[in-house]
Image (cartoon, rainbow over all chains, first blue to last red; front, side, top):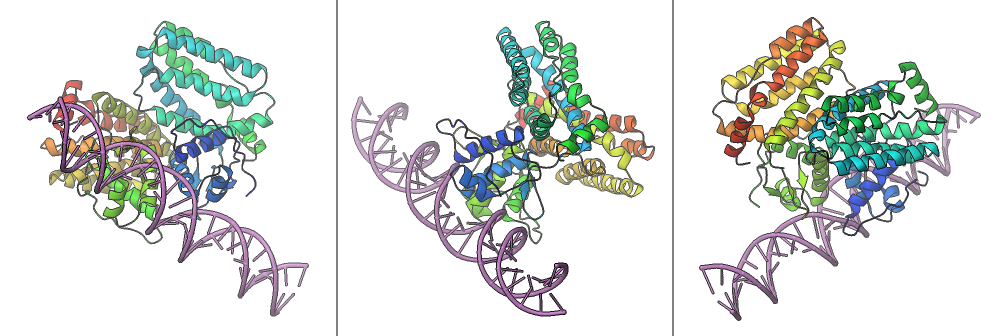
Length: 231
Length: 231
DNA sequence: ATCCTAGAAATGTGATCACAAAAATACTTA
DNA sequence: TAAGTATTTTTGTGATCACATTTCTAGGAT
């Protein structure tokens, strides 16, 4: 295996090695630094982050349970390749799950949190303006996460994160091939609906945000994009 | 910690130790053999299944990513306690996810698979008749799984399994306190709809199957049941 | 009796090692 | 030259050990 594209990451005091490995790998997978199909080796990762196989294996197990990695029959581990079918199911699932999460968050929304949402949205617009697509992608997730976690006990949250994690890699790669990733911004709409505590309107805005843009592409366009991305 | 209620399990040739540990723990959690709140120790489990900490830890990491276990701040690991809120969200999520899964399965349904569904349903009725609630619970899952996996590439499947895994323990315990678990059987209805390849009717039957019965209890009844179950 | 503290036991964590299987490489043969 | 085979290397897996932290248990002081 070649050198692993693993940017070092801030490591808070008291964080265990396997937790750190999990975060670092997750981040790399999310933005497409690890190519789908490229096989990962435990020792390679351990060496790249100057630790040992044991905690790395734990991180890999977690990531495969989260849908971020796939373990093949020969026990090789890789980021799964994307298919048009899988892509459209993931978009559809995001719609279902995130409408549910958004509705359940509305009663918990505070003005302070709405302010944070506005701030994140502004930062995302900036990132888009300077064509920093990776940052924009992460800030988009940050926006959605900030909304849903207004309700602190959302069982759905790990499922949402799993969907993001499965979509992330191919979006990350697609961004390298499409000059400008077509970001839809229904965030303003969602914020307005939040101010009115209008559950239906919030859910509608979130669904539109997810399903339009890259998620609303024709099937043939998706297949074309995947081909470009080498999937 | 006391002796662990871990029934030995069939171990196919070539199955790794951590896979085996994962399955065995999963099974035990699913039917409520491991009490929510009771803290698990890595060494205890390893000893109970005559292996060592390393593979057990991998199994525990996977299970916590699947929502079956929770890792506390003191790094203690336990089956999470159920709350009325969590319970009703899980039921609601099951409805969303499994309607989605059922719809996507319909185009792939074969007569042979419908026959299997009929067979599973019959076995479940038998189990209910002889008041073997645990078997009935597992057969009910088997029925749903058999339906959804008609479509071999369902991204939603792990999420469905996660919801089952989170609901399982409390159902397993509730069954010990309620003389007869109120099983709803909308399976016949689902089967009839499948024969007609009627997506809407299948989804409706599945949703009814999930939301009625224990999932449709009044909130106060749920709280009462949880109290009985020591949650 | 209750609370507090010091020692002991138990526990999570991660590095290392040995082993078996898989992959890669080198070598031989047709 | 190409295909097959033997050898070497790489890799996943799981047991074991050492260390730090937590939890449990006595013993003592108030």
